[in-house]
Image (cartoon, rainbow, N blue to C red; front, side, top):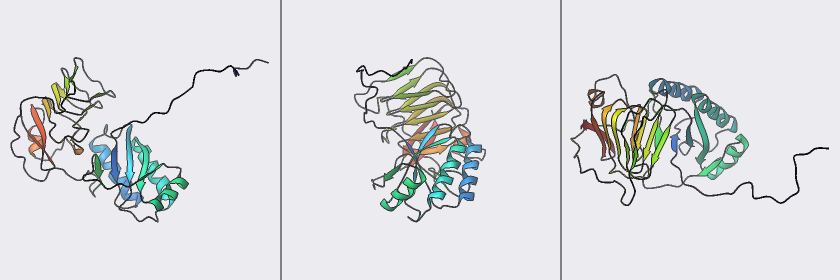
Length: 260
């Protein structure tokens, strides 16, 4: 009888390694599934590419520890429908057993000085705004690396939809960035063309990082974990720079945009 199994010693089939990854945290403020679904739908309509294959951690510290496993499964299902990939839930020790019953990984809550990459849902379906005031003029510093000792990565071709480019230091793109593409950099991001898709600078927690682009039409921008969905139709400092060269920076925990 033929068999594909063999008793001959072979090289190890896999190896376990540790790694550090940047994940988006979705902080849930109530367990109403109807409200949650509506807000996800509203955000998806505003930025349809934002959710696609985005790994998230669901933060439940603001919910009662008595949340049911069935509610967790329902919330996880809504996230999958929107295109997000639920990696784990985060919360108290009591939540751990509920997560196990729901078949979802659990992470303990560790209070830090500042949360990075947190998307907090509000009633209109948008993330909590990171812009509170009209932006002050950003100082255009010399274009030195925002991460000392890290090399600059240069991309000399278009970044297409579905592609993700990461640089531990600065990232320079000499062509356009398509909708659905994603740029991530530990330092600055420079786009010498049309910027669409997502641009996340200072992903390792560097608030001095900047985003420079020759034509600003991004779906989402982020610096040091502060997010903003762009492309708003209402009059604002962001809409006034739409389709133009722009510099985006972080000042006093708020994202600001100015003319490049």
